[in-house]
Structure formats: C-alpha cells, structure tokens
Length: 363
Image (cartoon, rainbow, N blue to C red; front, side):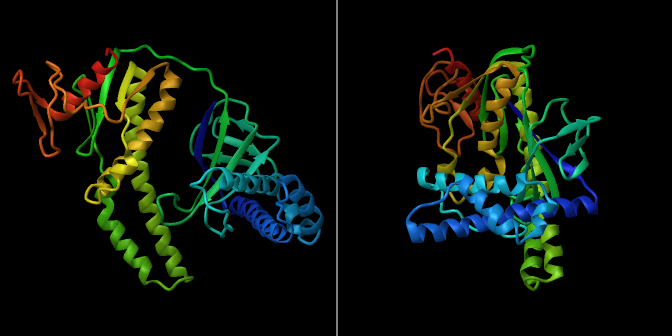
C-alpha cells in the first residue's frame, strides 16, 4: 500500500460543504464521548461504536436535520475513531483519555463510496462533487479518503487549507542501483555524510525563520483573544510554520529518494532522538533536522525501490572506530577530525563514521 496526501483547490462553495462535513463529524464525536462518559458513570460499561450509531440516528439525527446535508460516512467514522481512541487509552500507556474536539482544531472527516479520479488532478467525492487538487493523482482505484482542514500556528497544523489523503495498491518498482552499499551518518552541521564522500547540507529551516516566527508570535500575543485581528495574525504565523515544515520535508525527501533509488544496501544508526532532545543546548538544532522523519521515509522508500535498510545498534561506536585499521578511541563532540593514535590516519569525523557504518554489514 502507498499513501498520498495533497492539497485541494476549492472554492468558497466547496469550502462550505467541507466545513459542514467536518462539523457533523466533530458533533458526532463529542456527542459520543459525552454519552460514553455518562453511560460509564451510571453502568460502568461503555457502548460500542455500533450501539452509539444506532442511538445517534434515533436521538440526534431526528432533531438535527443538518445531519442529512452531509454524507452518512462522516458521523459513522467519527464514532469509530472514538471507539479506537478508547481502546488506545486502555492498551497504550502513553495515550491519554479521549478529549472533546474543538472547532478549527484538526477538523477532519472520512468518506467512502463512489470515489473516482478524473483527468489526473480531479477527484469525484460523494455529496461534494468534483474537486481539483494541486498535484497529479495516481491512476488507481480509491475506496475511501480522509479530508482534513488544518488551521493554526503549531507545527502539527498547516495554514488555512483543505487536504485529502488516501491509500492505494502499488506494485514495487525496483530501480537500477549505482552502488551496492552506502553508510550514512546524519548530524546537525551536515544533514548527511555518506561513505562515498557525498554530503547533504542541513537547510536549518527553523533557524532561518526564527526571527520572523518570534515577531509574528509576539503579534499574536498582543491581539485580543477571539478578535478578527488575532485570527489574521494566527493565519500569518501558520503560513510561516508551514513553510518551515515544507522546506525541511523537501530536503529529507530528496535525500531519502536518492539513497533508496541508487543503493542496494543503506546503513544508518539507530539514534535515540528522544534522549538527544533532552540536551537543551542542542534540542532546537536536533529537532530542526528531522532525524525521526529521515528514518521513517527511508524505511518505506527502501521497500518501494527494492533496497535493504540496515540499522546499526544504538551503541555501535561508529565515531570512535578508525575506518583504516579498526582501532577504537574516545572522540569528544568538539573534535571534528578523527586522528588515529595507532596508524596516524586522519579523516573528517562524520565521513569516518559513515565508512564504519558501511563496513558494519560485512562484520
């Protein structure tokens, strides 16, 4: 399976229809959560998604005719999402108790049925009609889609836009490889240093936009909560956050695609990103690199292009081993050149680590 997410090019009429679907889904979710809480307090049992949907049709739809203005899939899936949220809360320790949804915060809804891709960048959706996308869509059969509106100033949201995402079947297409194996050492100053000598610069998108972000964040804090001026300021701030995220994602996609397409075996380190972020002096720079996203993209792209991803253990001393003679010595972070005390070999610290990662597959 492969997934795609792209922005929709919608007019004001279509925005209204999409907002109605998201509003109904949000209302059904909040109603279901309130009902579950009340039922549990009274009977110590929680109703299932099917039971909630039957009660929704009988109790809510009959008194709210605007439910019939949207697809029935939107409230149905909202109740399924609520049921999954409760199961995650009970089985995954890190998941908290489900919370009520707020308007404008991760609004989304689900559609299924007669969905058809037309002429490359048009898609026909039930109850909504034909909608244009900014990207060419794959020529495939689509069973269901999820549409989301992201508005806000945090990195988890995009500027005021609607996005569509769906999964589809794809046949793996292995590419002709230029090189058998390559070691990749990722860092802060240079995003990736490869064992073949290639280097990929770190775009440092957040660092470049930090002054503008501070200025716009200050502008938001000075506006009256709930005012139109505040909403305008939040929208401007969200656009800058979106640009930062897009620049970082573009650099990572170009790097991971080049690695997966041209190399049979790719060796990287298993970095403890959450532990690294506890270093408050480097946390901002580390987060700006997107180490986790690099690994995530490389994992699925290796499957697409017929490559093998090898992850060296977390405590593998790639920076301490001499790639020429195998001698191991301590290497503090401030030393950027590896100077072997045994064979007098000298090399850039990151390049030496990348060569060691490449040699790891032969051990």
